[in-house]
Image (cartoon, rainbow, N blue to C red):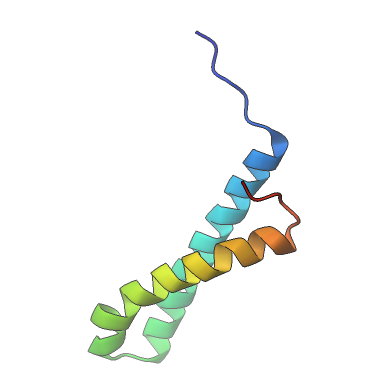
Length: 69
């Protein structure tokens, strides 16, 4: 059975989404180094990742001019 090939737009959208996840993780690490508080680590940290990915992915896709499905 042949594996269906992804369209270039779909592949590009996946790369943009991966970049958003990487940005969210790296920025959380940097914020954790700058602000060393338990509140950031256990309460704000997970909410930060979810909000950056949720709000950042559509914005990054729009900036990259990738058609959202």
